[in-house]
Amino acid sequence: MRAQGEVLLVSCYELGHQPLGTAWPAAFLERAGFHPAQLDLAVEPLDEAAVRRARFVGISVPMHTALRLGVRAAERIRMLNPDAFICFYGLYASLNAAYLLAGRGHAVLGGELEQALVSLVEQVSGGDRRATADVSRPLLARLDFPLPHRATAPGAPGYARLERDGQRVIAGYVEATRGCLHHCLHCPIPPVYGGRFFAVPAPVVLADIRQQVEAGARHITFGDPDFLNGPGHALRVTRALHADFPDVTFDITAKIEHLVRHRTVVPELAALGCVFIVSAVESFSDVVLARLEKGHTRADVFTALGITRDAGVTLRPSFVAFTPWTTFDDYLDMLEVTVAEALIDQVDPIQYAIRLLVPPGSALLERPWMREHLGELDETALTYRWTHPDPRMDRLHGMVNRLVEEAAERAGDAAETLERIRAAAAALAERPRPEPRTGVTPRVRRRSARLTEPWFC
Image (tube, rainbow, N blue to C red; front, top):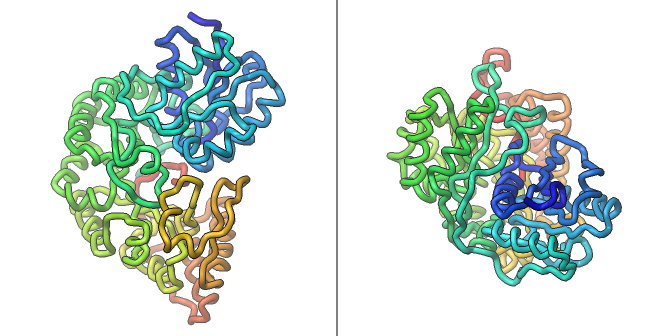
């Protein structure tokens, strides 16, 4: 066993979940004889003593928010321990490799990276200050997965809970697959995985579920980019989960396209304990969906809503509410469909404010319909700026952002927030103020199952 504490793995943000972005690398490193420390900056402060002890610091950046926080964390780490070797790893490390290697970190890893991370740690541990990682292409070799090493309990303060029927229970988090079959242009996964996905062996997934249930979890989030990339694997895992823990519920993420194609799977998932499905609807505009190459249409969204309702599963849509191709009418239509389809409590209000993110490496950069709206790369924001051809849309985004932030600060009701956004949008469009249409009052409205951490990126 190598010296304890010489390797520090840092998670910055994983949507309120106990971070798998450090738990899996820690398990690979332990199998190689290291004893890494783990730190989750989403729920605990930076441990300065741990930073000073570390020879190698790995910073997990699976999403944009995590990367922005990770860059700031790296600045503090360099101040506390200038000799530490810093490696950024994860989806957004690959996309932003040039930026990160320009004095912010020593190495970058993406894709199926854990074994490469072990090799890098071994180089640094052996005294090689010139240790490098090949960032010319993502790592896509199949891995021999160990059981993730969970440093904290899923029920630790600060982690997300499942909220259902007025009760909150501890939620665990696992991944049964990594990568994705699809090539949605705005997604960070295709530039790294190129349409490939990797199944984690069912026994490993189930053992990880077991250790979290034994630690108090009564709900499991499957964090796969698309749980139905491999429907047979998905059913094997969920059938075994239900057989072992019949009272434990779960949620998944799946494309609209897959919900329609695999519609016969949805009722069984419901019977096995699935209480909601997150799906990247993105827009109700066929123009926008085509620009993003989503693989589904407006009509498909309504079909998927019918499939999930018939099965007794809640569909929780996510949106990219602001794109260069979203018209004012498109935005108003999104709000009206949300009301008409009784989705008010199935949509976290932050979704009404999500603006298209175009990071370096995005496949959107190759498309002429994106380039005509594109500005300069904002390195500190880690995204390209873009401007909407209708100036009102950029003003609307600022207004909606403020309304959503205010609602979050005071834990405002989703229906009230939606009504404020509808009114603000109508006023900016110089249209009559819409009649309130959000149905029953908050006191009697039955809310659908949700996690207490709103989805974000």
